[in-house]
Length: 335
Image (cartoon, rainbow, N blue to C red):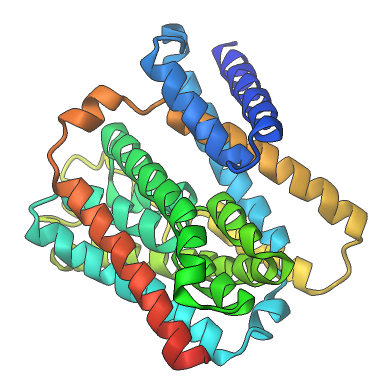
C-alpha cells in the first residue's frame, strides 16, 4: 500500500515539474522535478511514513527511465558524428572519471562517494550515479550528496555555456559538441544547446548520448576492480571479504544498463515507427522526472551544508576539467 502511495507522490512531483516547465521553460522538466523534490523535502512536505517505499519507488523509476533512454539512441547516428567528435566525448568522459577518482583519494573522500560524484560529473548525472551505486556500496547520504552537487554544478554549466558562446566564437555545431561533451544531465544539455538553434541541439544530444553509452563499460570496470583489485579504487577490502556471507555481489553490469543497450540496438534497426518512439519518449521523460523528484526528496540541505568542502572541491574540479577537455577536443580534434 505504501509503495502505491509513494508512486502517487512521485506522480504529483512530475505534474508540478511539468507545469513549472511550461511556465519557465529555461529549466527542463527533469531539473524542475529535482528542485521541487529538494524544496519539499527541506520544507517538511514529504510524508514521513513513506520512508523506504519512496526510496524503492524512486529506484525502480530511475532504472526504468535509464533503460528507456536507449530508445533515444540510434547508434548509426552516433557513428555519423565523425571520429573527432566521438573521440572528444569519449576521452573527456574517461579522463575526467579517472582523474576524479584519483583526486577523491587525495582529498580523503570515501571511495564510494568519489565514485558517485565522478560518475555523475563525467557520464550522465543521476542516471550514472544509479548505475554505479551498487558497485560502490554507497549509502543514501552519499547518493543524496552526489545528486545535490551534480544538480548544483550542472545547472551552473547549463547557464554558463550560453553566456560564453559569443565569447568563444564557436559555430553552432562546435557549440553543440562542447555542451554535449561537458554538461551533466540530458535535460541540462537540451536547455543549454537549444539557445544556439536546432543544429547545436541535435549535435549536443547525440554527443551526450555517446557519453551515456559509456555507462555500461565504466560500471563493468568499476565492478571488476571493486571485486578483484579494490585498492585501485581506494577500498580497503573487496566484496569477497564477507565472512558472514551476508553481502550480495552486485551484477557486473546492472540489468537496466543491459536493457538500455538492448533498446538502443533495437532503435538502431530502424524498424520502430515514429509514433511508437514519440510515446516512449513521453513516458521516458515522465518516468525520469518522477525519479528526479524522488531523488530530490531524499536530499537534505542541512546535511549538504554540514558536509566538508572536499566533495564540493571534487565536483568543481571535475566540472572544470570536463569543460576544458571538451573545448580542447573541439579545437584540436574537430576543427
